[in-house]
Length: 309
Length: 309
Image (tube, rainbow over all chains, first blue to last red; front, top):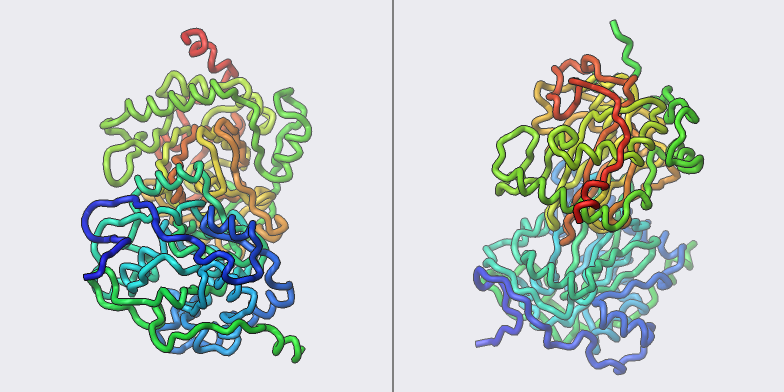
């Protein structure tokens, strides 16, 4: 029987456990774009925001590609295409690193992949990808959660050795529902009460109902952070890396400003998915990649577009 | 028949109308605590934040009084006492300027009342008052609205010659759902689609369903504001004055930090309530004061407490 070092949804009690695994693996193994202070900051806080990865032109290209891709998916019937409850406007598309020429190149972007390798200390692959467009006025709140808690229980990710990369394609202000993160929370694992029913993912994409951390644990994480919450505000083009176990959430967005981003989860090639640690069956491939896993080769993203303009 | 200069909820169309009434009435008639730049800023933006009205000790006294008053109201059955859907914890109490010794003195606070007289250009009275306590994690979103739209249609307030004063008793950060305001929006009246049913107030206190501005008008206000939204963040004790017609709202609060405030609406003695301009009957006295109206005499608030400590 496997030992579960990160048990969650196994009873009615919540529990705050110290993380035993390292945050940055094999520091120094890879040279890369991140310097020592970037790495220290990621290790301490559980996230890192970079605003010098893409040029303004590149941001325009990405925003354009995102819009076109969503537009083209209109009317498409597929699990990977998510529309709003009312209307047929497309809000999210999953698996863009497999199904889309531009976004598969973006998922292999040399700056980003090399940074992910530095953080995870190994070759990396994409565990999940998506692009999101949220119009203004109606953005929904997302309550606090650790992605790793879900990935571990529902997808069988063994260890917190993955990093999410959000390429933010709209300006983020304090008033349009930016991501909020609790600094240092990645050092603790919140074991959540409850059990996972079958096909939880079908509704958890809209509203998280399980794997919800209890208020007492959240308060403790907040106090350990010096009563500080960080908001990911900044200009379009900002790149946010956050550790798989960092506690995060976001408020709704009643402002007129839309929000869009491209989102890639990099996992260590040494941390591939196993059987889920919870008692439900595996989630589908578009949420948790298991097939044809191979290390990503870093490559330039924009040469092609630049050449044709 | 009365002419309605601010028609709203009279059909299916939304409309953005220029405000014809002044923002500050009879400027110069009253000396007072607000200086010329305060007045200019209020006139331009439709709100004013002051952080030097109360001392730290006074903030502690107010927070204490608020907590005690809510505690004492536990189990009380009254329209003016609002509990959360689950549990019997008291979250808001209305009419505290009539029913509570301390808060009636606070409603007459010399600094605040004199400032309100400067803004409204006449003697003033309280049209509505309440104290609020919202715990962390679960604060609800409030969508954009103009208070004057409601007060005009549902309460018969003739003109936008009232000012809300929020004395904020907890630190407000960008991440715990602070009030958001659209600068300059008080210069425009958004005529909202729809009609007012009977007893709308019973549910509108929990969730606004009528008098909702349309997205096109909101976008126009936002653009006129230079695509700027202001958030009322700051230290406990901050006093926020905002004009009755200023467009405002707030995001939910998933942070662990509670929020509490004391809230007074000052109306000009020359702007007393008439018959509602909409077709529903009058709302109750605790939401819209009509009885025993007389000008407030400014007075010190804290002498009594200080003497006994």
